[in-house]
Length: 124
Image 1 (cartoon, rainbow, N blue to C red):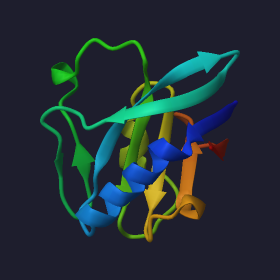
Image 2 (tube, one colour):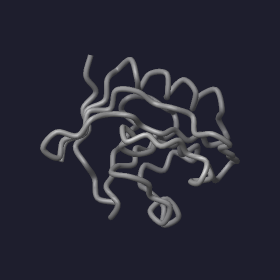
Image 3 (cartoon, one colour):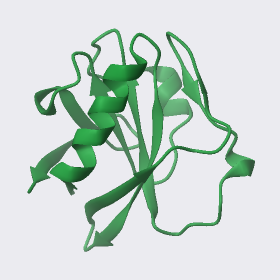
Image 4 (spheres, one colour):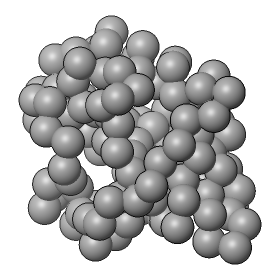
């Protein structure tokens, strides 16, 4: 599986992560799936999301019905690149992207529900 994300989508997410640091931030990812490959085209801030220094969460029952949501992304202010056990226990949809401090394109990773690395490409 390959994950592609447009630069004009990832850059605002990284900027929001920098602005909210040292608190985490969480996003819903919108996109399309084609033969298992995912193209992320947009993001949303989940309704009623809450976050702190070591967590970011949202109530699943408050999500709109939106079949274009392909996963989530959240920041790791600690700089940890890997998903935690809690991240994996709260996995939603197909993929999880982690934006690790210092929040640059080189500090992002995509993972499946088992915590396995997925190939991620930033496109123009």
